[in-house]
Length: 284
View 1 (cartoon, one colour):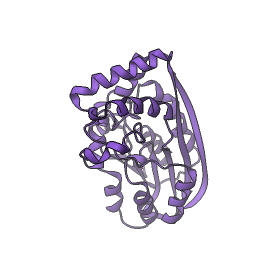
View 2 (cartoon, rainbow, N blue to C red; view 1 turned 90 degrees about the vertical axis):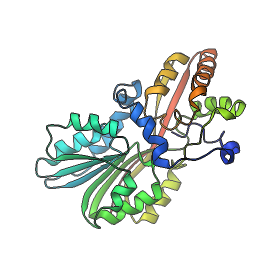
View 3 (cartoon, rainbow, N blue to C red; view 1 turned 45 degrees about the vertical axis):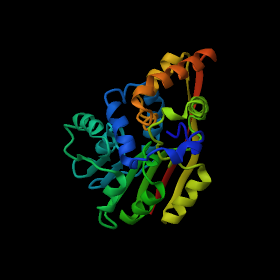
């Protein structure tokens, strides 16, 4: 997530930037084996399951799951559309996809491809897809472009469902990390791009410009408390929400940064993190 966005503006010009896909790929690859078992997965996973219950599934549906990760949503969609349907999951992390393929190895109506979501959408024919989902992944691409492509490829009245973090998600951690970066700016190798919507109004604007109709949209939040710096840092090293931050640090300075974070959290007696995100269902 945008853990260091505000603190990094001052040093942005002196650091090299890599492509947006490459920035996140290595971190998602590195946390693939722990992605489904970290403490926050069940917390956030219930929102994925909740939004999927709002959608209208049918037989012979062609569905796309963007940023499918290890296949949590893809598996649910596969069960809903039956053997005559097809759901295709796309993700930039091949390591995550390996887990997804194994998870759905007995589901002939599910396929997975290692591809950026925007590239995948641009390869689709117009008016060809019944349902498109993107859970916890839109901010790692280019949201306004992705939404425009979604509007192009959906069939008339086709549905879209999105869960996307806002820039204020994990604000407590952003402030903590910012203090470390401000004091030690040269621990950074590069700066991850910040593409998460700032708020519900800005996201509504992107949806409207894309030509999609809003069926439901709201801001949601949930909290997770870490009572020690060790627990927080362990989560930061193995979870999806911190993708982009880990590899943004110089290899020989990562332990230094994480040690500083541990010290600050322990000094404060723990830390409460608040996930802030948008819950959106729409149609063409």
